[in-house]
Length: 269
Image (cartoon, rainbow, N blue to C red; front, side, top):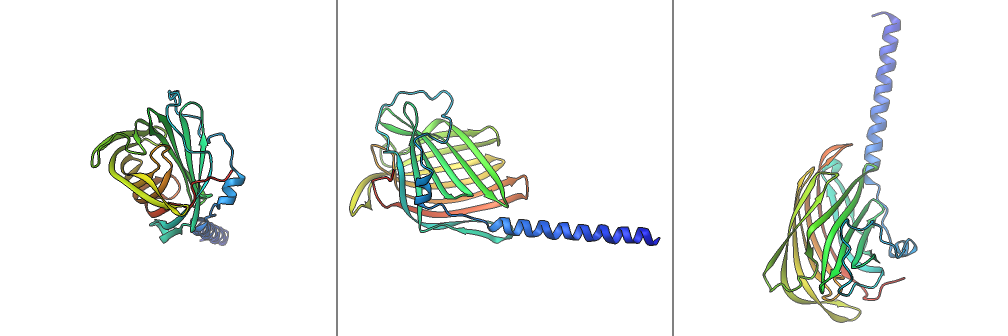
């Protein structure tokens, strides 16, 4: 091989190795970046305006009681993991949930666990019930956000309203952009209580099972104990196992297990 060609090959290999190492460092570093969101930070960013634009076609008049707007604090345990590079994010001991009130019957509950992990659940207070009308998740690994946004029709009850213990209600959600369909069921488990503000607060315990199909597949099991009139979550336990198609790193397995318990019935404003 001529000397000039040999020199070119060595330089090209050097650039390739440098780029590969740089990309590897970028992926490794980006995998572990996580900035917890404190209640104080959530409060500084609090506005009355919901973060979603409202669900199309949902213009029902308010026919029920919505939770008070503001920032609620939850005692938290748990973590989330992805199989690529063995990444695990342990949740802060206290997390925030932000309630905002929209037009008509609409309201939302936003759960900012990290800057890189924000969940939003939209609901409608109608006919004495609290119906989940959609959910959105922004989950960032490797500096690349994966965003889902699904509308539900019919939606599922957050309180198991009018359900007898052990009976089940079906619901369905669709994320058109990501081509993910969610089939779910709500099972009312019965009345219960949660220790909040130094006393036992009554709540309605429901089991919410969702099965996802499409670019994201798998299942999530959430057990909620919600205030009967407002749908405010007093306690939640969840187990999630998903396979997610990422445009940047390919297919990854996501596993989550966590528990959240409300610290105070009075939100911060």
